[in-house]
Image 1: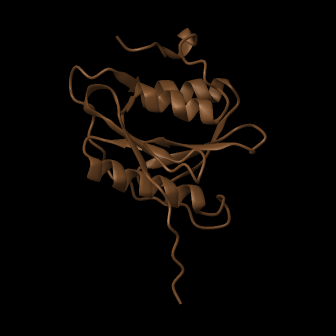
Image 2: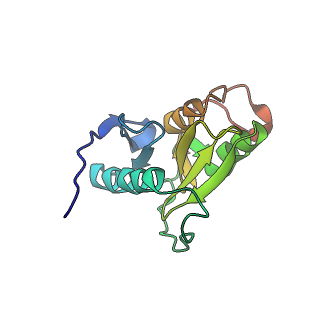
Length: 149
């Protein structure tokens, strides 16, 4: 017997050609892509990661799909800067999938996905941080998180 689940994927235009998408029914599930198809595939990967059991309950995934780096001239945020910002605020990476990492607050009550692209659309980075209740990216000079433009 096969169970099916119908969810909504919301697409939005990001900066410099990125397409940002999210699944409103599962808070913290969001991703990006250069095309609508790529964004859809990436958000499905994020959704699978968010719905999977916590680490320790299963073997950790080891395969990594290489994502395209942002095109030259794009205004985005380096993934390492966003991750540093989240760590500085006590968040921790709890799991990783093929193209996303799952992060949680210190209490573990809030979770979000962060794409494993080298460059992340700034609006998506703000959404990832704010879904963990750490949305003050502009003022975090130590992590190099500044508004684009």
